[in-house]
Length: 439
Image (tube, rainbow, N blue to C red; front, side):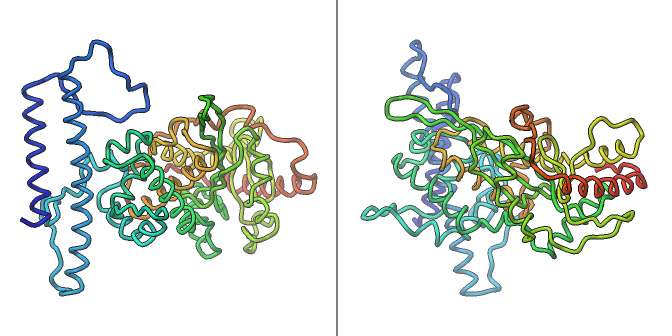
């Protein structure tokens, strides 16, 4: 019996055993992954403990078998394409591969927050990088699918190392290695997926914003959020802090730039001023295309910001204390429509559960998790995989804390503020010409 048939038979047998146990013991519940206290009640029975171990084995086997079959599918496709380009694997109308794997299992998205087809594509892309640089004198002997699965499971569910080790049947040291390796590969080799667009690409970005608001030459929306982290030292003492992530997005909620690694206690404007993005724009490396003429003013390429950001020639913020139906209020209305893309990104990033709770890692690795999730966010958008994309764009409490959004006095000089006001006035006049558009 070949390995594919054996894997299918084992899965079928395990499923039948689990179902039989559930029928015999109705109180059994599937094992769930949480970060809450997992100690069992003193009244728990031995049969309940037995059921948990059986169902844990079922869950572990199901994940491992699925990943193994995905790997076999990819290798089979590759081999067939080399032998006979016309003899490719054909999917049946029920959405299953030739090996019987459902391509859009809800359980698969629950494990990894991506579809099975995206997982297969990503594993194939990262395969040579995930298989290299194993620990010296102790090769892992794990397939790229398992390595990727372990890392994604950590990001997707926020499970700790001990839980993941049990889930995948490996040691905690292997789990730590795979998680760090995935973050290192993504943040080092694929950071271009969140690179700032070149001048030609910025034309498309600005057209997207103009179609939404009617305001020309806008090249991104900037915002800053914070993620909590906690590190427990050898003495059991917790060190709690926050990591700031300054993000620029386009009208489709694609991340154009991310600056993470700054302690979260600083205000938004101070984080901006200390970022490489600020230095690159001020030095003319970014947003340097020719300005356009509008109501007698020269409108450069600019970003849009909200609370806590200063008015600069390349950074437009809303007016304060405006009168209803005034030119300024019309501008604020159009400007406010651009909150949606950046809020959507903040919410979508927290759908990676490692970021929705205090990250139990050192500061440096917590930053790597933020970077990896941001890269994966863009990957999913690129592949039209909406597994983590959120439509819940309520105010981010980690953004609205007053001590973070307050502006620092003396950020800019008078000339910058005057030029910024002239540019904003011209954009306000443009906003008055067009009624608000719905998204």
